[in-house]
Structure formats: structure tokens, C-alpha cells
Image 1: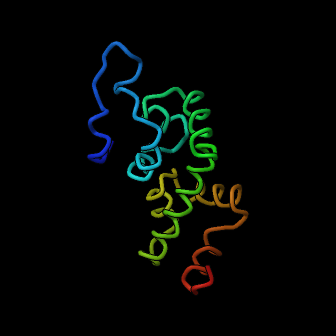
Image 2: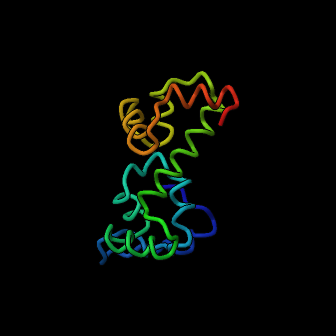
Image 3: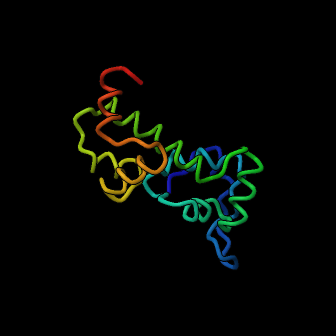
Length: 132
């Protein structure tokens, strides 16, 4: 897990607890997500990397940021998708899916259809034509 210098001082090994690290403050949670998007496929994994249970993390995150962790995860993935398409326009959908933390191209198509009612081909065309 990559951790920026700002939050590395919070990572203390604690063998008696369920999690390896002392919980990282919530204000750093979006940074942790952005830096480790490939390793964070779910909110549960994100909560564990932060050192919290899923329920506590979801509730606290929603109170702190006024959006659910799932909404934030989707937003960050979608933003990363745009950046990757613009940086590497000829990458395959499978390679881009792995880059943004999804299992494969089918997971990418499901993600886009469920959350944004679109598909990979449409997004790529719009971005490369400068429409979005």
C-alpha cells in the first residue's frame, strides 16, 4: 500500500488489534483512495486500509464528506477513467479497467452502465472528440 508522507506518521503497527495499523484520520481517506485505487475494489477494502470497520467507515465518511464512500469511489474511478483515456487513447478497455481498479472489461462496462448509464465506447468517443 502506497502512503503519502503526510499520513505515514499515523501508521503504527498494533499486533493486538484486528487491523495492522492505527486508523488513519478520515480527512486523508480520499488521498489514500486515489493513491491506491488499483488495490481498492470495494468500500470494505478501503475501510480496512484506513483501519476501520466498513460500517463505522461508511457512517463517519458520509458525515464528514456529505457523500457516501461508494459515491466517492465511483466518482474517483470515473475521473481516473477520463484521465487514462485522454493520456492513452489507444489502450484497450481491459487495460483501462485494471488501471482504475476493476477486474476486467466486463466489470468496466457494468460499472459505467450502472452508475453513469453509458458505455466505454461512448465515453472514449466523446472525450477524444472534445465533447465532454
